[in-house]
Amino acid sequence: MFDYDRLKDQARVVGEALQARLDLLAAKHSCIGYAHGRGLFYGLDLVTDGASKIPARNAARWIREWVKLLGVMATSTGPLGNIINRPSLCFSLYDVDECASALEAAFSQLPESELVEG
Image (cartoon, rainbow, N blue to C red; front, side):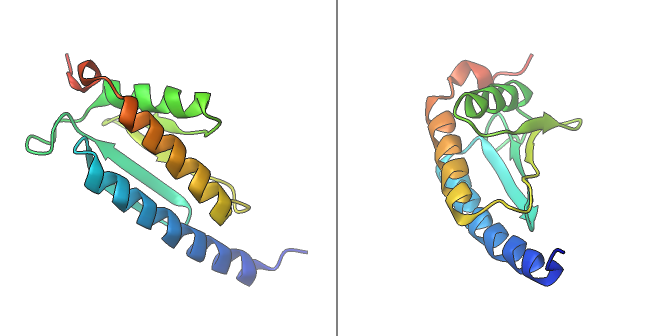
């Protein structure tokens, strides 16, 4: 039998750690227009630049594929092609580090050409 209160607490604690890491990524990479989430459901809105806020669908696809190569499952979805992740409830603080490290590696390698829409 599941201990639902424990799972909710785990999701809250791990989700807060994940949000903190995503906020750090957003502060470092101007193509992340907004990092948001609740619990273990989070999203990164990618933009061509911080001023125009034009959705960067190509960059979202590129990041999604790069992190998959690093063992992190992510999707790009919705009309804006945002990066979305919904990890399972067993997602841990260790997994937060793995996920954030993969995203950092991907954003550090993102070619400028992927930020051009058209």
